[in-house]
Length: 167
Image (cartoon, helix red, strand yellow):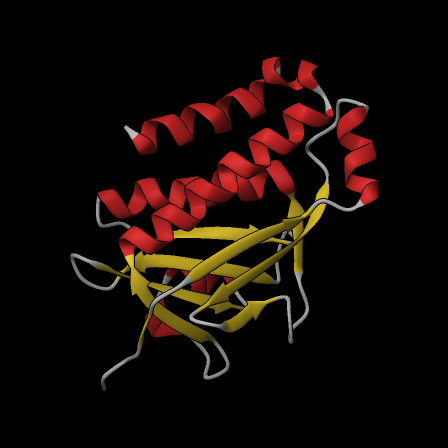
């Protein structure tokens, strides 16, 4: 079965006032709404409900997905502490399969997926660019709202992971 390759990926964290207030108080590890669009199709957000999760954990999971792809491994981004999972795995040497899954089991193993899991194919380069761009935007937004967070362990880890991917 031929699968469509999508030519765009957009990840968006919705920095609402409540999340901004938490950051200003020094607590970036709070829940945030997240949208993901691939090839103009809403995976999360837009015409579908957004997903939520601890902003820092989701950001680290997204960055880990890029690192895992470099070693041809699958990774899972956890939203809402379940029941929403994003499976990110190699399709081939230049493409990545991204699947919105409802169980951790199907996120880890494509053969276990139910018929309702939606999957998308895009290039590894587009995925990496979207994740690192979102990571840089996240880091900039958080540290502009609260410059003291530049020294926060998790925020430093996010910045270091972005640098490692870009180098």
